[in-house]
Image (cartoon, rainbow, N blue to C red; front, side, top):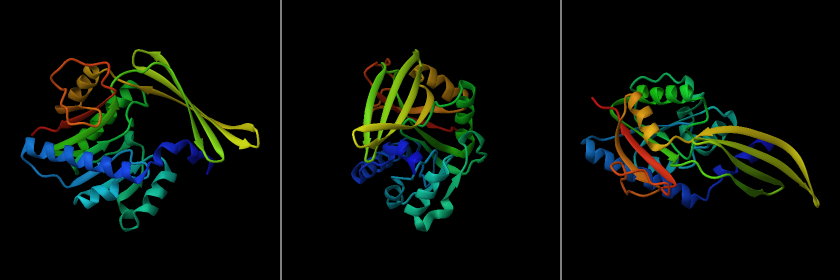
Length: 246
């Protein structure tokens, strides 16, 4: 479908999906050792097409997925035939799980697309979904980037992506989809989003207000814990591991 061309970033190589699952498993293992517990049940939200779920299941985890996009959930079910009942369509602002999961994963810039108040509600929903000693794995950009443009070739379509800086923590994202017709590009559709990229100190306050305690903060896709040092504008991405204390 044309609408799905906007989701080019979900069509990653399998090697990347496997590597990200291995990294998540490593993070989970570090948290288990730190908190002296074992984890089993994961909520991935929003889950997209569940691209790394089978690799997490290979580690013995029970993985559930929630996403607001019906097309993505359909693909997730098609790709995980034995686990169709583990997927559902729902807005993460309206979930009402109560201490059902050991782990909540919010991965690959999936946080910050709503108002500040709604973003805070989402963190509180994540907290409520976790069992005591459960952890949140939150993967976010570490800083507000300068304005950037990029072009993605999607076969018969071309997707032009623009990130425009609005203020110190807000980016406006615009996606313009064009269909290739010979030497002509025909505009098909546009998508506009605002993304709030919280400075680390502000995100830490939001997490704590939601009830979490910060366990680790890892730089990029590493296990370099930067929780106890000053924020570095060159961090790029930060992976927050937060837990629900007893």
